[in-house]
Structures are given as C-alpha cells and as structure tokens.
Amino acid sequence: MRLFIVNKRSGRGRGKKVWTKVRQILEIRKIPYQVEFTEYPGHATEIAREAVHSNIEAVVAVGGDGTLHEVGNGLVGTEIPLGYIPAGSGNDFARAENIPRDPEQALERILRHQVRLIDTADLGGKVLVGFTGIGFDAQIADLANKSSLKRFFRKFIYLVFLLRCLWTYRPTKVTISLDGKSYHYDGVWLIAINNTSFYGGGMKICPDAQNDDGWLDICCVKYCRPRTLLRVFPQVYKGTHINHPFVSIHRGKEITVQSERPLIIHVDGEIYGTTPLSVTIRPKSLRIL
Ligand SMILES: Nc1ncnc2c1ncn2[C@@H]1O[C@H](COP(=O)(O)OP(=O)(O)OP(=O)(O)O)[C@@H](O)[C@H]1O
Image (cartoon, rainbow, N blue to C red; front, side, top):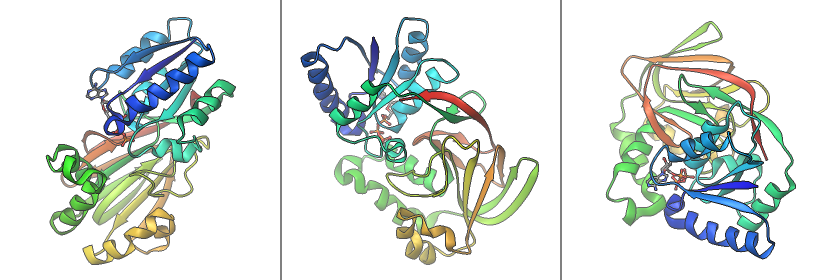
C-alpha cells in the first residue's frame, strides 16, 4: 500500500487538480492507496513520520518542492522510499530528477518502484533535500511570498522583486568554511548550497551538482554591480554564469556560512531563518523512487 501526502494548495491549486487526476487513475486501475491532505506547514513531515511505523511500501508527495522537503524530512534515514508527483510552481527537484510533470507519467514511475539512494544534508534539526539559498535570492523569495501583489503578478512576482532588490540589497562580507578551509568574500550577493543543480524554477545555479555524489555544491556570487548582475542573470538558466569572474564555485561536505549581518536563508524554497548556517552532507540517506 502507498500513502499519498497531498498539498492541495501547492502551485496555486494545481495540487488539487493533480491529485484528482492521480486518484482517478488509481481507482480505474484498482491500485490500493491511502491519502492524507496537509492542513498546515510542517504537517507533511508529521504524517510521513507516522507512516514509517505502519505497513506502507512508499510515501508519495504531491505538491511543490516545499511538500517534497517536508515529506523527505519525515522519511530520511528510514527504509521507506519517497515518490514524488510534482504540482508546485517551481518543481526544481522534479527537473533535476527527470520526474515527468505529467501526473500520469510521474505515477507510472512510482509504480515501477525502482529505488535509488540519494544524499541529503543536515542543517541542525532540519534536512535539506534539494537546495539552499542565502542572501539576495532568499530576500526576494521572502518579500514575494509575503506580498499582497502575489495574486496580481503570479509567477512574475519574483521578477518584480528581483528588479526592486537589485537596487536596494546591500551585498555583505561572508566567510564560507569548507571542510576546515575558509574563504573570505566581500560584497557577496548570494550563496547557494545545492544537492541538485536547479533552484528558483529552473535556474541551473550549481550546474554540476549531483545528489548521489557525496558532495554539496556551492555557488557564491560577489563583487559585481547591479547592472552586471542583471546582464548575466539569464545565463543562470543554462548554467553558463559560472564562467564569470564574480562567480565562485566550491564543493564541500561540512560547510558553515557566517556573515557580517544576518542573511535570510531559504531551504528547498521555504524561508528557514538567518545566518550563521552549518550544513553537513548525509550521504545516501534517503530512498527515492
Ligand atoms: N493546508 C496548508 N495551508 C497552508 N500552507 C500549507 C498547507 N499545506 C502545506 N502548506 C505549506 O505550503 C508550503 C508550500 O508548498 P509547496 O512548496 O508544496 O507548493 P508551492 O510553493 O506552490 O510549490 P514550489 O515550491 O514548487 O513553488 C509547504 O512548505 C507547506 O509548509
């Protein structure tokens, strides 16, 4: 029996539509299932944690990267595999894992039940499944999520706040420690610490990141003027931004980020807190389908 954890609100209601389609297929094909709907932030983790003690063969997250993150947090370190049917607006984990956006095809992949072990990373309490952003990008995500203009601008809300923050954001001094070695950077715009290559709805911020190689990839953007950042920005969708001198790429297993002033952090697309941050890789700690 598979348990589906559905965030009906994900993707501005896409979660509900996707689940209706998945449920129809399960019923037509007489495939037994259980379903639980999330009612508040953190609920998906609670449901997944409880499922670990029952006779469930897989837990399937239906939602965006936030829902995947929460279910992953409930299953990490256990024998129960995580399936994913993307229904969010970003769907960066699905992009990295080549999980089809079409619910029927995504379900087909789950039913094949081919288990793969992936890395996660410990943040001291929570676990990162896909990606983390610190600084400029997290600030944009925070403002966009809180904004009442969200309904009006929909997915373009990030672009609106990107343009606004470009002229108001204050780059700062940051120290990144990687497995004991420290890098001091001034004028830092953002630091991404990624297990998978994508974030922000298709930005290939750490193009070489692989979630089963035992490493976390880091992209640090620093020392550049807003105009330059804006000019180079489209290249992040191809991953070619890494060739610019103001972009530094690193890899590490134990990473700490300290900054002159507290910087906002997002983890798998949801606001997590502020710096300092410590991240430690947990190799092959999550089973996925
Ligand atoms: N019933 C609910 N009401 C309010 N928030 C919820 C509810 N259920 C889940 N959530 C929260 O909604 C957050 C966002 O969900 P999710 O990431 O799945 O969708 P999304 O933001 O539309 O997609 P994406 O992250 O791909 O853009 C989750 O992290 C979760 O904490």
